[in-house]
Image (cartoon, rainbow, N blue to C red; front, side):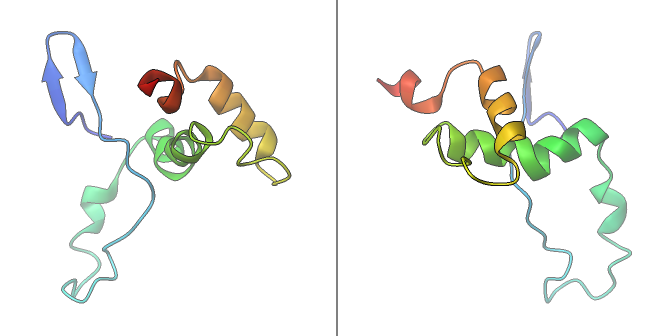
Length: 89
């Protein structure tokens, strides 16, 4: 994802989840917004998986247990620096 803000050597990115306005009522021709949709493979993974895992998994570490993505989600959560709730305590 393109950096949302840059300050010194720190780059902050918007950690969005997948959603689309491409089919929105005001998009008459899908070819117009699509060129802006190009992202790297790493950014695509973050956009479609990692950010969602961090959003729900840091609030409830057992959220993905018993799902098809449990192993991958656990790997993402173990790599996360500090869970959101722990930081708030």
